[in-house]
Image (cartoon, rainbow, N blue to C red; front, side, top):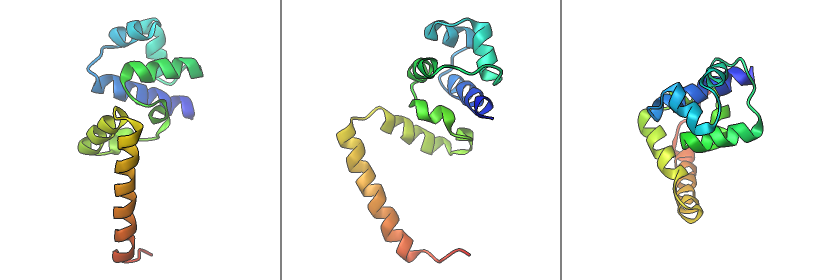
Length: 113
């Protein structure tokens, strides 16, 4: 259920930012009780609200729809956060390097069956 995934991610990123529910709700412009409904997956936020929440939490809105961000390593999350705050020119350059590295190692890694 998508609202459960979004709610879990809202809570995850709020905690990463060290915000209380009340602080986050205030920054977004909603009540703390509505914030709680969102975190528990009991309410569906509008697209506009998702955009505001993601901005306050400092993440791309699309990350709120990823099924398990907490399973990503802390280091990877840090790098993703840093990338998220870089300009498009830098991101494009870094992605080019990552793609080249993956392509190089695809050919060298054993085939998994």
